Image (tube, one colour):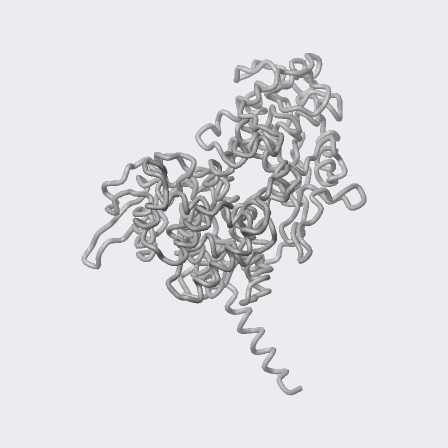
Length: 583
């Protein structure tokens, strides 16, 4: 660190005017403000690299007028100037070079700079989509690798990976790539109907696509159903050596048994790391380690459960869902005279116990939600580099809790979906939503959230008057799109909130205001917890009629809504508990 740099930084620490600081630099070059900002970031990186975490905030925060702060700043400068400038290596931990928000948003297994380079290259290839803090910081991350390519001995590959070519179906492969052998494609399936077929389908894949075309209006449903039929067809060909239209009842029972017993030990069918189709590594089933097992006090769990401790991949509910989807498809194909019989008919669903209080076990109390909002607000520092991402996270939390929307409903919402009804009492705002099974409803937008929405519109540089907003613009924007017209995807929303919950849990576990109960809940939490928190808050804290909550949440049956109501159980426990006082 040369004398000119030290003089400039010491002048900044002592609160010299910007004009005086500019005078220390050559004319026509960068301003002192820009130069010092770069130097402060470099010093923060240096402090982080050498494990001096207490100095990082000093250089990233704003300067203070107190003499005590000035002394701390000058002392920190003296400490760091004597240390050699760090040179990055691919084996360095990401946390040595980047802050907590970025590290918290990294996918499991991304620990070193080499891992981070692979993640960025996967994003360039279209293999993964960066979201949250990673999307906001993508340019910074790429610039880091470009600036240090010589030291790292690695240059980022920005070229997209071409889609893989079709292959004969001899092993597990996506159906988009697979060439099913003629003998197994269903043209001559033993369960094919004898009469004229009512759909234009010569083989099983055509028949599946014909049924799926009925779901074209709902991409989420289409993809979910397609996944189940793809799994069945692959299993039929590879495991039974039959066409889907040749499966008999015994085969269908065997498939249900396969789903029930499928474990992480079956590497042919199961992957622990989601992969994009056509990019390699894809498997029909992905096992996601439960969040409460993913991280503990000693850090992340092993990403691979290993053969010595295999876990079941599907829950009983998921197996029943697969059977329902498949049976629905085959029933329709029977009606179209493509199949003679639906051989999944009569196979019993799995019975399993369902705790009535499950919804409230996956919800935050009102007090805990206030703590969540307070923590998110504290992270949203207007002058910080990550402010667009942290401010959106705060807004997203308030939107999700204020409406109880499902994650795909949050992702799909646009300004054109907002509706305002007026009367003598004022304005009443609603959001038109298309929920499960393409069912439309109007959910209320509380006045308190409208205030939050208008505040966030200001951050986005958009007019606060709702009538002047572009109708197709999203309520939850992607930060990768500078026009503000691209929706953040459901996967993006999941990643943003999951990263935030993990970051807050870490803050509670290591900070001065320890709250182990809330930290434990945050480790397990997902976006859907905010929907449960909404229902629990309305039912128990505000005693809103269940019929209203049912309509707001879009439940088909009020018995589902009643799962949120636990005030009677709490009162019963209190009475019984009081009865034993002093015993």
